[in-house]
Image (cartoon, rainbow, N blue to C red; front, side):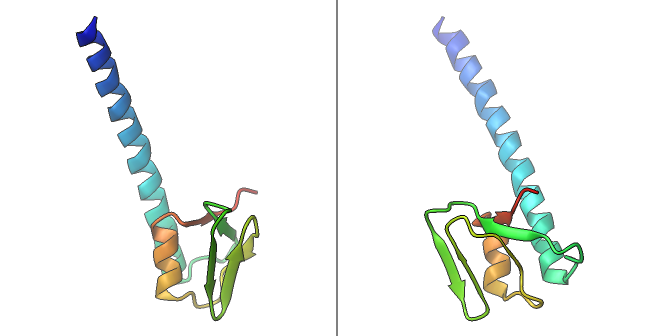
Length: 91
């Protein structure tokens, strides 16, 4: 019985890792698009955690606010997108 639970926990852990890897790859692709300026479809972005905020001289996000990125996003903003703190808003 304990061995079965351990096997189930290992399978669940592997599935969670796969989901995390997929999400990280998507985030990396999105950050690369932002970095290269390939955001022609004017996507809106929001904070992954609405209880936080992000502010820099040309761009600010607070709570559930959704905004388009500035024309030339800063390296810090790109890094926030890459790390998943700022995400694409669902349409």
